[in-house]
Length: 126
Image (cartoon, rainbow, N blue to C red; front, side):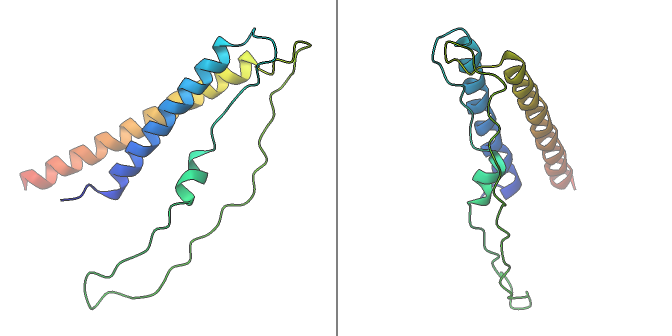
């Protein structure tokens, strides 16, 4: 039995959040390194939108229409707030805001996973 697709998305998003948190930590660790450029990852919505999903009919009565996937619009990447005279572009405030965003998204993923776990247990008990 294959896992539910939503569970896989939560797992992939958690991996992405872990990588982003490591990138943010690296930025903060190099806040005083001359010439260091702040890094960030491509947004998860962009990563997941590159995945081509197709609906599959599992029964003859299912509709066989092909659904068109909407393409994301171009998003400008926000530059760091300031570049110091040493060429360092790390803004601690901006990095801490990103870390807070990662923590909120991880909490959301945990809530979704718990909800699905409760749903699975309810289905098994029935």
